[in-house]
Structures are given as C-alpha cells and as structure tokens.
Length: 283
Image (tube, rainbow, N blue to C red; front, top):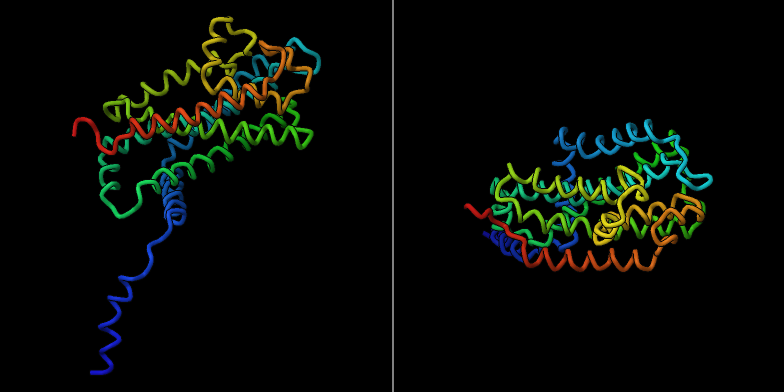
C-alpha cells in the first residue's frame, strides 16, 4: 500500500510541470521549419540556385563592362543587387507562397488548435528565414569574390552597414511576406500572385540591371519599396566610396535608407496583425 503512494502522486507532479517558454517553443518550431524546408528539394533549388544562376548569366554577359566610374564593374553591381534579391527571395517570396499553401491545406488551422503559442509559429518562420538568408548571402559572396572581383567590406563600419541593412531588410521583407500570404485565395494562385510583383521590383530596383539604366520615373517607384534600399545599402558596403556617384542622389543616403527600411518593418508588422488569417477563405 505504501509503495503505491508515490505512483499515485506522479500525475499531479507531471501536471504541475512548467510549460516551455515562448523562446524555447519558437526555437523548436524553427528546427521543424528548417527540416521541412530542406526536405523540399525543389524549393531549396529554386530559392538558392536561381539567384546564383542569374548571377552567372548576367555576370557572364555584362560583368566585364565598366560601371561608369573607375574601379567598379557591372559584375560587382550585379553581385550586390543579387544579394539583396536573394534576401527578399528567402523572406518575402518564400513566406508569402509557403504560408498561403499551409493555409490552403489546413495546416494553419490545425496548428491554431494545438497548445503551441501562436507567436511561436512566427518565431519559427523567422528562424528559418534568417538561417536561409545567411546561407544565401554566403553563397553569393563566395561567387562574387571568386568570379566578379567583389571586394569584401574593408572596415568595421562597412561590415556594420552590411549587417544592419541585411537584418532590417530581411525583417521588413519577412513581415511583408507574412502579410501578403493572405491575398491568394488558394495555393495554386499563390506563386504567380506573389512572384510577379517580386520580379517587377527586382528589375526596377537595380537587381537585374544597373540602377542607372532604370528610367527616372521607375526609380521613384522603386524608392518606395525596401528592395531598392537594400541593394543600395549593399553597394555601399561592397563598392568603393567613389561609386556613390552612380546613385541618383550621388550619395549612399544611409540615414534615409535606415528610415525607409524601419518604416517598412513597422508597416509590415501592422499589416500582419490586421490581415493574417489562420483559415482559408473558402473553408
């Protein structure tokens, strides 16, 4: 009789155990997101290989041309722009399409009904995005240094610029990706609806062509969105100071750049809160 008393107390002890913290749950969810991402080979190839392939193609065609300022080639401009495009691809495009698919298949609805804190789902997505962003940046930087004479930042100040542009840009694009995931009515319409505006932004923001070749009215349109400022910030980190003359304002405009990216982070957060849905419209 006395031996069985501790056994009867086990359920009560187990029920009083503290629940995992939000950070612990979010990191655990991040590991799930990473495993899921890297198991989808087609998605991995599309996200990582496409910017690298485009860099090779564009760099091979235009890379040796002068960029209208001494010591800078079009290939170096392409590398900086392509890194910005890669950041937006791993955040805005992937999250916008991926979350729309999860909503359409009912996965979000099932997660909503679990004991997991809802915020942990978004923490997991951000963890996955930042890991993929670092991998994408590393791949494109290695290619840029090896094939297109890209010069890595030569001072602590330039590395700091590189870091805050990447972090702010990735945060803004991630929040916008979560927000726009509510626009597609089905998983089938998610890819074209989100990829088309992303491609347009890449063309007018100096990713696929030098920004100086973009018509002035399209430059003004691009300046509204974060991708243009991400590309400009990365150019300021990788290119010599004299390359600032290639920008419309003939300067890097770091203060304005930080303000625009921070404003998009705030706007993206508001849009996420107001528009995110756990259930598909037709369910």
